[in-house]
Image (cartoon, rainbow, N blue to C red):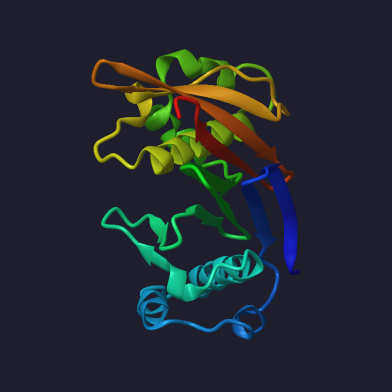
Length: 210
């Protein structure tokens, strides 16, 4: 299907989400690739990753972001020559972008039971609320997307997800939340916007200190 969801956060901040259901040929039919795009595409050997790549390019097209306006910094984060801020995410059957005037981090993740196995690596000691009650897999996945979104907006190497990133308790189904990031002796506060769907979830992180 084409663009699945368009979420306007404010006058200058928007989220676009694409549900990947088309064939690779359908996804790529409309897309003009730059030399850099072609080089990046060559690195994706699996069809599912190629579909994710083209779904993102379709979203950029929907947002009127030209391929020539996009490049990637040394951390691998997308940067727009126009000065606008962009964050990109994809997970199997879903892809999304968030863009606006101020730095943002955005992440999407499909629910998978294996998240339970890796949870101890990224959950903070104060985030045990996700293990209580129902929807444990979904809640842990949402915390993961929040931390990935925080990492993307911070863009700082060496961040320890389980020690330096703390998501405040939330009720499952909540539309928003908050988080803290601990760097050296400073605490940075972030607003979180949650996206909760049947097969996936996502988080948009915005720095409240700006």
